[in-house]
Image: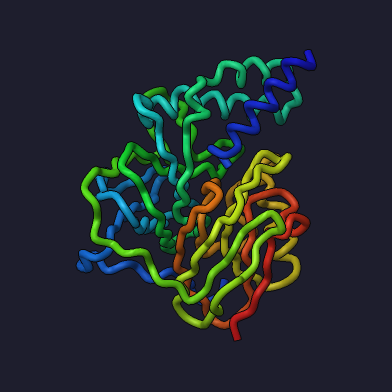
Length: 317
């Protein structure tokens, strides 16, 4: 029995990196499609589906997520191993994770071990490459990262009524999983410029260069480390609008996916974008965000982010 439980926890640890989903309207400013120096992949989120172009040149790539729903979404970028399709990912991984998660909430550990024990070995070959962070409804978010040629997908695993948005109850059908291909043709985009750098390492996150300002910000995120915590999630960053101390407490509790209300819509706070986990140690990504005067916080999608140094409050005067 204990062997089965340990095996289940091992698979949960690996899987968590996969599923890790008012004041005046605040939104990121869309990239101009007419600018051919921008390697742009534009994705719309609406009706529990992603829509967009399925091919993009390689190199520095801006992904613009237009959230046309009233609920929160994000767009985590996953590179697929050779021979694995988005449908395979959904049918062989997403469905089992949803079932295992439901059993885990019920405390049925023996059955959890059986479900997660059947997860395919290619799971360990997945790699993660950022993508736009949590963005509240009817807003847009942008993230820029370097993408090598290959087959990828974008995933949102926010929950509605205890069901991950990337879970498809019908085999062969995709919900919030969007496949795309990065071609061998290099794009024309140069590495972005940033007015501030946020560095993430074993002590947490902090601004190490530049300064944040009122208006549009381009923020460089330097992953000096990438740590998997006992909660099974890694380091990333999302921006939240803070109206009171209660918002901080609500955000901290909501970020714990293991709780029944963790990552469940509606979110208790307003999110404005960021960079998803689990980007590797030494990698760099960028995101843009418009900041009107007020109180904000950078926060990571991990339980007790404040105790890990992964919560940083700031104000825009």
